[in-house]
Picture 1 (spheres, rainbow, N blue to C red):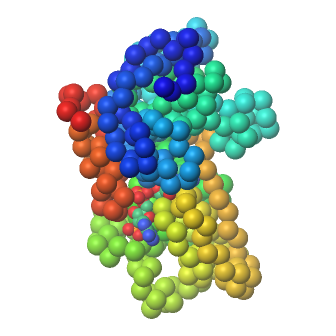
Picture 2 (cartoon, helix red, strand yellow; picture 1 turned 60 degrees about the horizontal axis):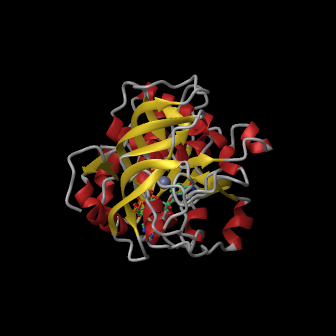
Picture 3 (tube, helix red, strand yellow; picture 1 turned 180 degrees about the horizontal axis):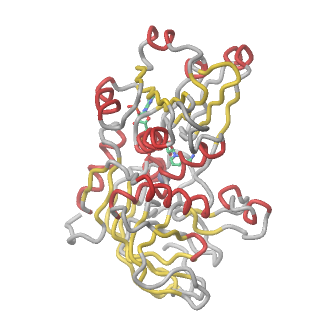
Length: 364
Ligand code: NAP
Ligand code: ZN
């Protein structure tokens, strides 16, 4: 029995994995009453992030089963608590990875709750009341208003859902490295995106919207045409081709690595100019190989980044509204979740699965 409190009185239908086989089956559980700081959201759509696979399969060894995944949630607000002034019933809302933080530390106070030491996630986390958090593979969610954002009117709710995790995760390091908009007239920087998946394809869209020269660094030759024609990438390097990698040595100012599996960072670092920066957002379960020579010979830096703060997430949503940026998605219904997770694990999606949670009931 999952840990709940006496305040958990609302029955919810959801979908959970119960062991490391990762198989998702229907799971009924309880959510807390809508408190004074809470909003209740009827979930319309939920993206399937690669992090959901890491969790259902217990890749990181931290999964508390049963786990109800899902942290790319869009829906409509159906209840608001007495303290909530910025959101109302009927609003188009989004919930990403964050469920709770201390609200008091230097990071929380500066809008960087994502670096709070007491951060708790939307699923597989422990909320302030001690209960285990359950995510967006469910009919509705109760969320503290401080971790909820508005979805701009012009963005489709299904294609906007993955912005809540994939979008903010790639936006934040671009912002952190002064890459949000090209610095004045002329071309921006030369940036590289490693891994053209859910995170990677949005990074390409941001890079182009912000005026940069964007290179995709991929293991999949089949993705080249679409990367160029559909996503607008300026260049494409097949990372398994040593000649192509050699040809593009020292050409990039900045690289974002979104790869979900273990790989060596050496060849990627060699693509950076001297003093270039590589930011890692992918989270393979095993350590990655980081040779010192490409670091020291190029005075290069390697950094990490996790999702983004809530104000930053709202800014990102608004930027997406301004530039009309959404994700390229394949909508699936509840009965297709296991198939979608399986295909995502095999790198067979362009570029994000989104579950139609509110669609017709299924026989999963
Ligand atoms: P995804 O859609 O599966 O994309 C990952 C991409 O990595 C694939 O499309 C593939 O691109 C490449 N790739 C896969 N296996 C590879 C391998 N063995 N060697 C080299 N490249 C490989 O996953 P995602 O949802 O974008 O998530 C990516 C990673 O970011 C996951 O580990 C996830 O947990 C993590 N993540 C981190 C944060 C954060 O806050 N830091 C937030 C969300 C997700 P190509 O086919 O182009 O090579
Ligand atoms: Zn995610």
